[in-house]
Image (cartoon, rainbow, N blue to C red; front, side):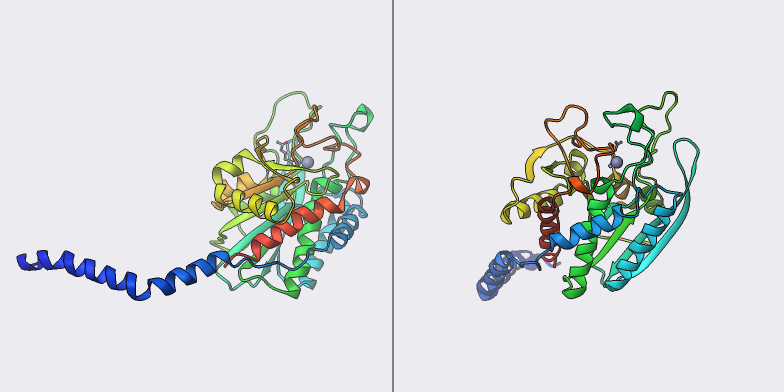
Length: 335
Ligand code: AHN
Ligand code: ZN
């Protein structure tokens, strides 16, 4: 640059900035203000419908991998996603459990508007635990659980969201992922050596081998135990560290909608759940909306967790509604 231009350049720059600021600032500011203020109201999440989806799953019996109930429920879930217009991917994999058992696992993915580059993923695990190892009665410790809350509730909410998406699609593409083999972790009664990463086998598989090569979403939301009576959802610390913006967005939305008593703006306890593997392996920030019980002494997940009482009778439509509506309002506001 010539020397005289050195003096002109800043003046031009100032003038140019000025022009931009004066000429179009009003319009830009107004548009921005409007864009910021416009809050889209999502369609109404039907809690009765979500409840029926939870019950349909528990009616199969415990969905423990390698059982007929598990296979039948897997078929049912894939069919539902197809019925609501999703492109369905099935990932079948042999996954090794803590005790060496080979689990015939199936991750089920429903992609809505698959060509859209802007995507959000919603996930839950669909298998149920083979052991009620936290049951008050020791005789139940090796019995499988219905997993109405632990598993079926998150899936039930997502099936209802799938039904709503078919009626009226949000702007972004949505992937609903049902992870398998989440809940086959080492039982509390086991004495002896432990294998690391023994939970969340399905999401670990998916994280290493996504259903679409190079799969990416802006963020994910994991639903785990979202239907219990008196359920409450605190900031899960891993999510709060790795997806803080999204955690705040979700909890603020819940408060805006009047679900502040369910979504408590305080930290609960950290959980190794599917969201950890989604974040670590697929590099997608993921928020775990998971029941946190601040008072129950045996587990922070509440009194029915990994007990035979985790059945349909302890599911509350109001909890399903609080979570389902909040998630809907979040995704329908994504541009
Ligand atoms: C652990 O207990 C290590 N993780 C809890 C994840 C879980 C189990 N979610 C439902 N069941
Ligand atoms: Zn569990």
